[in-house]
Image (cartoon, rainbow over all chains, first blue to last red; front, side):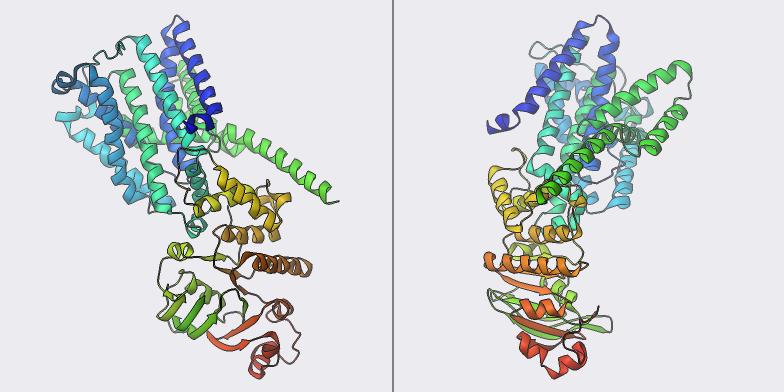
Length: 337
Length: 252
């Protein structure tokens, strides 16, 4: 209970956010806002969960999309199995969701236990290697995964608790709730003592260790939680596209998530969400004029990186922090005189 | 409190710590001096577990801690501040100390409460008061003065309520006035903190003024040990280290 009281402000904001999202989705009589926002939910969960590693812990992973894809595939494969839906009936979707999150979590414990002992470039490349390993498995295990075709033929989704995910309105609200719930979990995690321990590790892991922090264990917990949340992003995209595709496990998917973080800002909690929105809009707008979207997006990212030297919200935050610090320093000087 | 028995450590052919036996009684305030390369920092690293001695014993309250992991030694009550302040640049002074206190209270992995927990906040406020860092508490650690950064480093070690506090050159890189201010603070912390304090220092005036007992290292071995007066008049120390003018500052 005390959790709800301590985080009442954030919970209230999350609730308002959810109401706004649902109002937009249900209030506008056009599929575009719903489709746009649902794809943002998926991408933003991938980017935000990755930012728990990059922005909060200082661990740059190049293989985060593996967990996103794995979540989508577990969810899709279970629901495509007649034995599974036959046995669980109305409980199929919730059980498949939980199985996708736990399955991905367990996989990430194994990968994380190996990777988090390494630092910087070695961590980045090992996570990338494991991602490409999963990509190869998906491509080559054609009988199970459909190979490069992906999971075809639609994802059955039995109605549960009156929620019919085949209905676009139901699906949209369901995805919005999942998204906001995951964001709230990440919010609590980053504002808890655990979240500040992550910042210690990012700033100075050696010193954190000599203050009694079990650095390896904390990194592993963060890795597993962020991977599990990425899997929820994969589940949302599976519901949205009625399938799961090997490109989700390709390194470019992780790269896109890193773009979103760089674009939006890595030191602000909602930075990656802004990055996801900007990148998606940019992508859609550019696509109206040219098929060479990568070139245009690349130029924009270069401008942001070279011009601002940080993400958009980082730029705003740094400006604000500098102003506040200068004011505090001035107060101290006046106090001493 | 802390006793070293015949501790040896060598790197390749260089003997950095040569059969060192020392005793730091409970509640004492001791200084370790010696020219550059005498093995002062190596000695600290051996005690705090950053290095493993080749042979010999390091006894903390009669328990041998030689070769234990630094984290375990920290938990047993040996705190340390570093020659180059080792801090958390993107956090404020207050946040850094709260993190260290949270670690001491074993709540650094708590996920289902907001940071900082009330007991952590309260203890941190006491610490800031003790350190006299109230004016800079809300500034980023990266933005405070060099002296304050060194003090914050000591504060991080103090947050763990150590029985033995080891300071590696607390006044390194400071001007003369700032040095005396710093060492005054260190002395005050020692008086109020009920702990055994060992520090490395180059400024002889400070060492002779503050330390109850002084250990002189030379080429990894203990050259002399005693009170300020004993060291000042010790013929070998005078010859090897201080030179003929006993007030000269060494290794400056």
